[in-house]
Length: 88
Image 1 (cartoon, helix red, strand yellow):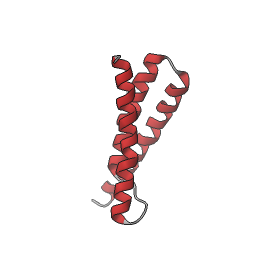
Image 2 (cartoon, rainbow, N blue to C red):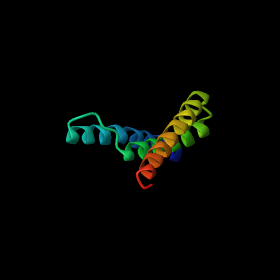
Image 3 (cartoon, rainbow, N blue to C red):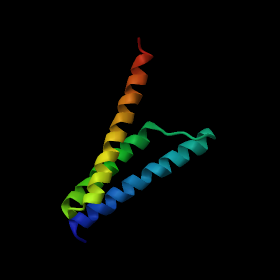
């Protein structure tokens, strides 16, 4: 298998794993819940898929994954700030 195809498949698998994690956590809590790991998996999957799309020179994928990374990073910053507010 081509190494870039492998990167693309792994990226897609990591990106899909975030939904499994969110689903399992929600089932455990018996309510809709997004764990912090969801955002880290989102970033990891997006970075892998962005790498793949850059190699393929696919502007649609590049734009989509780039914009998604901004959202994932921002959510992690917001979560960190919320956590730090409780330490005052």
